[in-house]
Image (cartoon, rainbow, N blue to C red; front, side, top):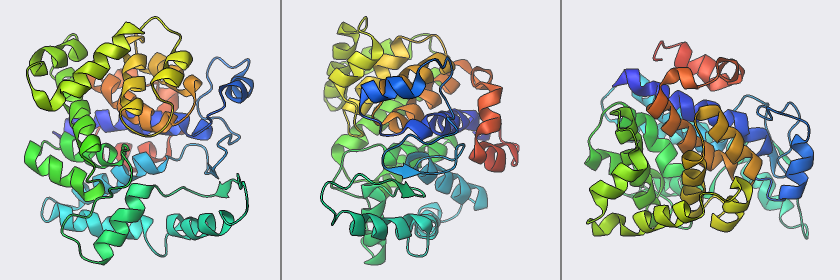
Length: 318
């Protein structure tokens, strides 16, 4: 299944492309930031109001996937155990992520703080995971938020061809949220259908799972998105959900997918909509790479993405 890692490349490049505008929730300000630009990916000047990393690097969403990829490339034994060790190394005490967590705690004592941290932003699920690993909990995933970290962590694992049961275990390493699990699995089924050459993965998903109670809410959400297909994407995202949480991040991603002809168009759409563009970009980028192949990812974007150069191309897995 290593040849399918172009799908992870799609997620990685999309995340890096969106990152300088991550978490810009004020759509009017966003319009000013991108005014006059046909391609507003990889902005040289950071516009995220929360954190600032070098353009070309990825957000915490994709970075947890990079940690999984590193773990998989090290070998196929004790993957979950080694993944936890690598999570601690990359995000835990001694890392820039953990240092910035302490800085955030300090800054939050200031009333109405809206400062920009220099360096990456550690996500709630990862904080909980690290703390749970420390106290040796059997299931280590976070429980306080319903976000995309589990999907992002498990994406390379899925692309290596591991079974559904173990895939769920990997997702649970990062999140125990039932909502997050459900939408992550829906994403994986959609990506799998796209990889297998299904002409219309979204409608095929509805057809296959329409009698399955487990995905009834997901199907209801997709149908809701279809009803507002003709709305301009930024308006639709504002209506469906701009933030990081499910189901909003999933629904807004679906709106971009059904209104776009290719990878580039879909990613530009989701960046222009604002909010948590990176959580959406990881899924949208993976989906279109699966659906249309590696050639759909702009080569100029790949060249600007640090992890693409360091991991994917270096290891000849695209």
